[in-house]
Length: 356
Image (cartoon, rainbow, N blue to C red; front, top):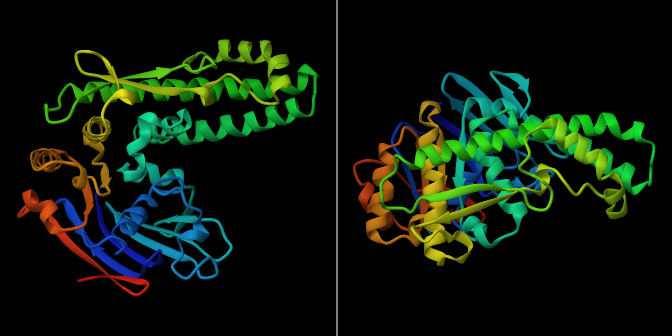
């Protein structure tokens, strides 16, 4: 669905912002620290989770946790409100009805790319799992529930392991929950990877295509079968008890990426090629979701591309059945979008952001 209206109150550097959008890309420019990324973060809060910065609600309020913040949006025909009142967790209302965060994932599929993700291929497996799970969530909103079920059962199992509980009866129910949810998590991830690879087949040659693999890591994390997962958990209780935690399962998975005729690992590629690979995956994600009209949030992405690749990126974005919000320090970075995009100039006066 399309985001047509955004209204911020006391969010980050914005005391107030009212923004109307349409089918055109939105190019947001202004100096560093003006508050451009804060707009993208606000839009990312219209998806389940903590948004593109992974921040706690109290840290997102302009005047601190004692004030709170609010975001209103029109998404398709729905009126959405999400807010964090002082000292309270984030809440979501859809058409004035309290809703779980997962409901946001069904209304709008949000995909983002930020400078902090540039190190993805050389970062820890945990960061790549988070990236893969965000991609997976864009295809399968129920993936969030599977992950929550698995994590809750695993925390309980880990508590039993640390307490040296040896009665098998305490473990069976938890391991059954982990097996069912863990199998679903792996199947969801495998399906997401397959859809990304298929979408890359229809891409141009401006950005390299990556060959993705779900890596098992050290814990058979690519196993989608609940029965074998449950059997493995039962067989490894003694080892896990010695470690004080669960050592096998989808929480140990990793995402592998190779590209080019020499099958170059992404982690060994140049910084520029790593960025291009990541951008290629984000575009493929949007392409695979064209029937859902996803929302792309691209933070400072143009600054790392030469003029040719910037123009190719903008052509791709305009051609996609997606809504895109991009940030950059100056309007010259979006010159190739002139006449095809909505432009916003963000300024900062003291602690408050505003539009020129």
